[in-house]
Length: 105
Picture 1 (cartoon, rainbow, N blue to C red):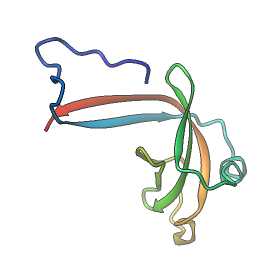
Picture 2: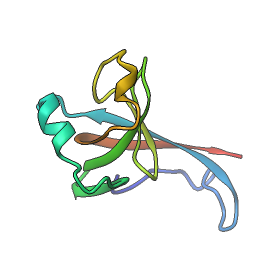
Picture 3: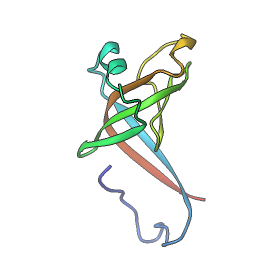
Picture 4: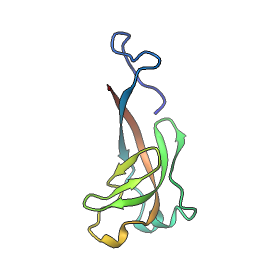
């Protein structure tokens, strides 16, 4: 995301620790084949596409729901499956919007 809006009263100070929850809204325009052939280098990464859009590269670490480890974050639900053989597979998909919320630790 390009920016986070905070008020001066609730903004963390330099050196403060806080938890950050990233929230992803996925782009549904990709086919299964496009996603599972889109990460031949087995990357774990988020690449900015400008604005709030990202290309996510990751590995499936769980099913029901499907969770993909993208390195910086884990994203739930780019595909739907209950097939255990999916765990360990690499894929790429588009994130239409990545936003976040911070919480003081």
